Image (cartoon, rainbow, N blue to C red; front, top):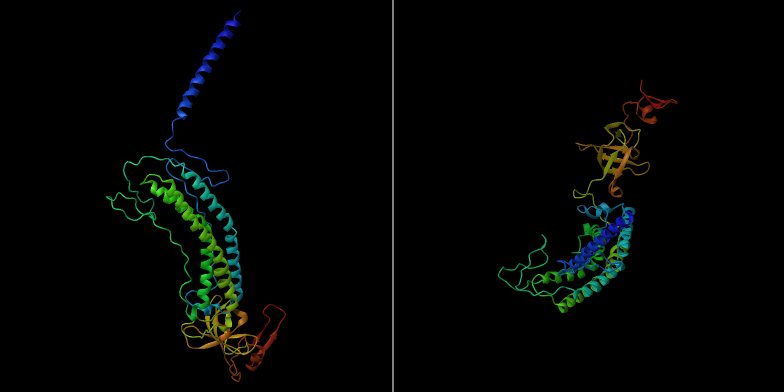
Length: 398
């Protein structure tokens, strides 16, 4: 009945739709055969996707940047070796951290070298694929970024290709021999700096291949591609990468392990550092951890002559002969001294170099006060009170 004509119409519509799709596909296929303005070729499997090839330029290998954090060392760059007295434990802990950082960077050495080899092979394989176009006139390239490391200044009328500057190797030494007052300090500083330098060198093993790639792209701007020259550039810079790779091994074993922390540990002796207490040397300080009386002598039996508050700091100019330790400190804004107990705060500086100061005699009877020790309290006419309550031990001067 009406089903057949409907089926016929549907069938004809399907045929028409199919024909339209075929025409569209052919049109798209024809368009796809038109060479694109920039042809991108995928990088080989497992390689850095940043390295691709366009119709004119090579995409250059990426230089990694691990930039490890180098912690501050236990030294004072301005004050020098005297500040290292008493810091053997801190120095050893710091050197151990530097060893760990250097070892983590060393672990990247072989992978980065493998990446350099892969970059060399990949660049070589793409040189012959560069699009060769007839150069009508010489083009003077413009600087590509603010660093302008690519070329010398070229006059506008100069039609020749400017010279791509050769990279300079940075294998500098550790500088001049430091003065006696900063010998160990400068040594420690150089160890920290060299660990950072070593990690940078590891990152830049592949850098010569980047430079070769950039140099090829640079000359692409002003001359017709020359595969033979470009291969020679890559080979030359691969030799530089090999030299960098070899030097990192020498730098680690010699500059870091041997002349660095190895020899430092053998040579460092904090007791051999000459640190006279002079105006140029940093003061030895005592910081109070509580409100404290400063006394006429190194004992609580002496009368108090000054009061210091928690958080206050004073200069230490001497110490008593034996334990318990008392410090002979300068009363601020005066030329007078008094004694404070080591238990009331924290001392820092060249403590072993301090003068031994004799205790004054106790023949002078102190004025009676609540804070006197037992013998001084009795000598002053007070009564030594002991009660089983907080603050129950004191001198009663009634």
